[in-house]
Image 1 (cartoon, rainbow, N blue to C red):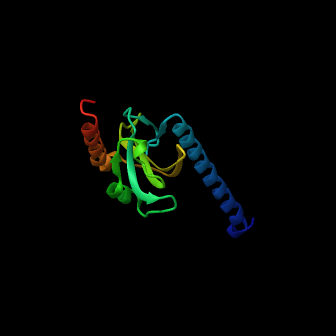
Image 2 (cartoon, rainbow, N blue to C red):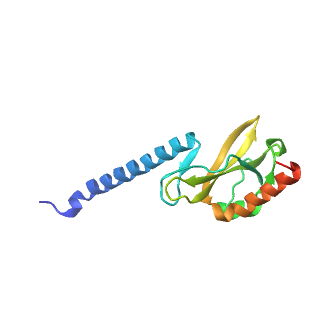
Image 3 (cartoon, rainbow, N blue to C red):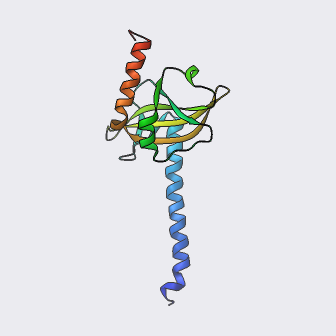
Length: 153
């Protein structure tokens, strides 16, 4: 019987293969859920679905190739509510925000897609999932802005 060091490369390969399989399954599950306008709950990993019929739209002060650190903090402090895609200046990025609710634990989360609008098409730059409560003030500000633009809706 050989020593543990003899089997170490095989053990490492098996661990890596296992990790790749687990990651691959979770990636495929998330991809399928996104294609069905859903997501995976960030708390319990069950399926989460769009909780509100609307999609919120926000303008970002970044251009095509710009990057930012600490996405949650940056987005909370730099997203500006806009009421339509026509308000996105050429070369500027925007965010679509949807509120999703988990079918199992009922917790809410926001799904944020940072995108660049090019010839009427959205080019996804980043995809984020954050806790709903931190973004609620921004969503409330969007609702207030919409009421000023479209009173009575």
